[in-house]
Image (cartoon, rainbow, N blue to C red; front, side, top):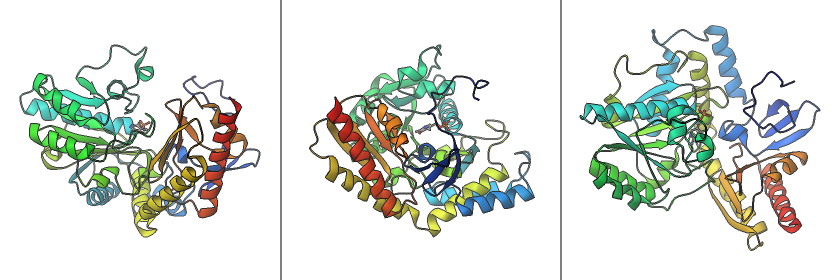
Amino acid sequence: MSDALMGTYKRLPVSFVKGEGAWLWDDQGKRYLDALSGIAVCNLGHAHPAVTAALCEQAGALVHTSNLYGIPKQAELGAALASLAGMEKVFFANSGAEANEAAIKLARLYGHNKGIDTPLVVVAESSFHGRTLATLTATGNRKVQAGFEPLVPGFVRVPYGDAQAIANLAERNPNIVAVLLEPVQGEGGVNIPPVDYLTQVRDICDRHGWLMMLDEIQTGMGRTGKAFAHQHAAIKPDVMTLAKALGNGVPIGACLATGAAAEVFGPGNHGSTFGGNPLACAAGLAVCRTLAADRLIDRAAALGTEILNGLHAALDGVPGVVHIRGQGLMIGVELDRPCAALVGQALEQGLLINVTAERVIRLLPPLVMDTEQTNQLINGVATLVRDLLASN
Ligand SMILES: *Cc1c(COP(=O)(O)O)cnc(C)c1O
């Protein structure tokens, strides 16, 4: 059936045809508990009625015009996001990689405007920023880059979680214009930096006039128990990118900026045919309203604590379990050995989980899970891990 598709994905042997909240059904009628949310996309769960209603209404009125004209829904979503983030301006794209492309271009133009002809952006090891040429270059994973050289110049890499390593770059690199980081690394293994990391990076950026740019594509929209993960550190970035959960499954990305960064782009500097079209923005608005109306961000924090406590209770001290960590509903269980096989085993049992960085079980459940589903998730993961560690 998939013979006409390019071989870019190693797909699991299942096809889903219907969803509701945290449940999915395959084409055989089997039900699954989704603890991945389409990789942190469907934060409101599947087929959320508010998103469905907004999409139906907008599709019946107007799907697309062009950024040559005013788009009221885009202006409305821009204002909602700016207010939620305490930032000033928004550019809309269609994906995470595109949102990061906008941020990287913004940083370069910011540098050029300051007379820096070959601007450098600081990025981290184990990061993930996308699959376009600039964003795969920014990504700190050789597997993503291999075969696609020549990479894009203008990046310098540091270890993640080490603010001093960023500070140390300043002397030798007068061309640095920005730092691009994830507040918690997702694909890299649910890596949570030291508590004062973002505060220190903010301080370094302020001292040198660099833009602090945060990739909140996976961490944003309530995932970590705050609207945006950087709010745990009580700092504000100059630039922030969003995508994944912003449309609850409808493709949309955004690059937000504040202060001097908000004034960098002018007419002709950047653009997108689809970016911020009425349909995608209607979905984004429904997501913002539902997060607030149903207090889902607080719920993410509470559910995250519940799941983390449950996993600690079930797995602490089990030989082979290296670390159990999380922020809100972004949860990682690191083992001492590769564990990708767990994904297929979980699937057979009707549970969707993910393994990233080879040894880290990653859980990204929807923010709408209930206690029964949460317990099923904790017990399912704990049993799978115990069985794997006992078997070899
Ligand atoms: C998923 C992701 C991206 C890329 O988003 P796409 O929509 O796949 O282009 C970038 N950064 C982070 C942190 C992500 O998790």
